Length: 419
Image 1: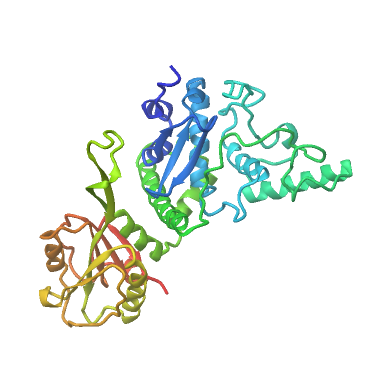
Image 2: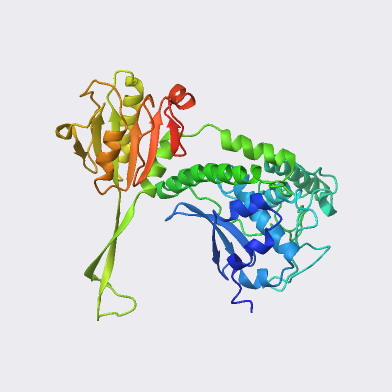
């Protein structure tokens, strides 16, 4: 029973009264594993996606109320940026784990398995432990505070405990076990070990892309919630404000551009005798996977397009040329194919204005539609009628003023370039 438990088959039932969380859940990949005892969230460096890892045995023994609570607990870790922006630079310690759980669990009273209501037994044989402000050793801590607030409060608890025991060892405020440790054997409800790691460039790229995806996921889930009666379910008013603020927060256009390029990559699998075929070793050749992206960049040449924006954009493309090959398509009311050029991977280029007319977005869109591209970026001031549909994903990049006052509306991403 437990080994065959597939969480995705139960999510709809568990979250049917929580439309916001149901919408958010659809955008999070779920993976069964017995490596962790309960559950946890992470950023997959290869896909740059958020993943929910869960232990099937743990979830199979949960009541529906507790299963829903654990799911919401994991989603709150993502929503509150514990996995990304608020992760300590020197790594997570036990005191960070407890502080993060306290910040979340204030919103989940009665929904989580804990010592007072043991619920399931973890695979280790120990009862599930939960952290709630206002209860047990946290009885003097108010509810509904941030991770950072609880972290400082817990450090004060550790200092006071050490003063009582006259012990100066145990680490730098970590609450290590033994003398001076007020937390005993307590740790986080779930597994935090895989929270975002940006110690190398791959990890940093995955972190940046995941942050941008989070903003879009929150925006989409909030839009679905607002469209329904009681669409926010149990999400409290103060949390809704935080979510809406995150949706409106300033977007790092450089991270979005890198995200667009990376997510346009497609795999090219080729047979090679140099790789071992795992299913048929020494019988069939293996496969070599190369990932590449063919990106079209249409550059509006009309006189109203800002030179400063062009310079910033091309400076960033010089960095991104390490990842992909670009096809630069200058246009005004037409596309002159003699001016189109390939920006090869690894090359450095400077921008130049080669045309000077009006603006029509149909010619570059049709040029891209007639060819095999994975993504289309249009650099423009947006001052022309809405074009025909694009066959590949398309994104618009413009100035902040033009993004706020576009000539036409679109459901495609419009990103403002800022210095």
